[in-house]
Length: 416
Image 1 (cartoon, rainbow, N blue to C red):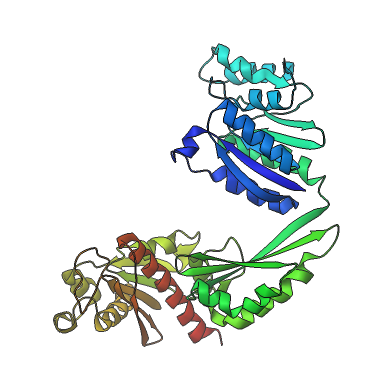
Image 2: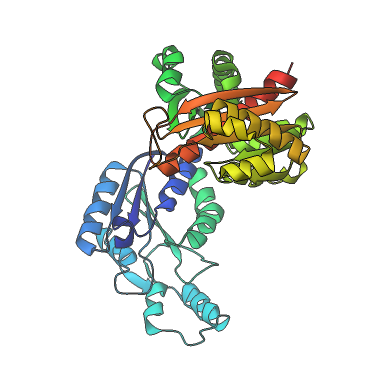
């Protein structure tokens, strides 16, 4: 079966609101085996909404609309869909009681007349209770087509869909979609794709797709199965082959695990403590690490040494090193990593120093030049990068490479 998503709201078209609902719904539809081929955003205009709805009904089995169920005049979804399907609006006593109860328990006791519009539902509709607002959801069925109308606020939409719509739709699906992700770091998207091009060319079921992030590539393996068919039998051989080809570039096969989570997991596994010594990233690396729950077991402190004076005072970087090689150099990065370990009494330290721009670059040391060092077991590994992009992008790429260097050093030293 096919599904189509229609997001209603002029504020989405104007970019004032990020359309997170569409992503949530697309992921849930995929889980159920519903194929989503089209997504549409339409403003608060009855004529254009009706046109989008008719088009969706013509080419899809299920149409899910979000937004436009509120009490104001520009909330047109309920009325427009009822008109297109030629279903008269009738007051639903149950919804009216729920609206009364909602206001009774709220700060605003008086019910605006406009809110009673929300108790008017198309004849024959399945009404979905809203425990977090006044706008009920609706399921409309006619001529073999299904329309699902949901409120726009995520706090209302997510629980309503999860608790009421998902069970309703999933019960009618003969197939389901199961996916597995393999996350890589330190490999570009084009190179990653070229290494598995033969697998992509031969794909049928499962399918393989690559997606690029900052310093990362995610490989999605998706299988379509029916009944009691075992998706693992289709997916696992591909995951095994991809891991074999990319080796230590694979940092996780868990969709929910981020790079920093994988790093903290390794630090805990080998009972290591880490500190950070940052210049151009200004604490971003430490921030990524401490975002991970339980990071306090492996991370006690970090150093932000933006100035040369701070590098000398906190990390014991030699004044002669700074004078001869400069703050952005292999030699300084090495001394920062070494100094960080001893200053924090940690097992390992990642140091980052570079030119994030937009000013300060020279022909010899251009903007984007970054040195990253990792001290571990009395040895310092230093890597040089020339990043592209604006200041924020350079800093973000530096943090990703810093985390990945730490991850690789742990594997090289302990995973034997």
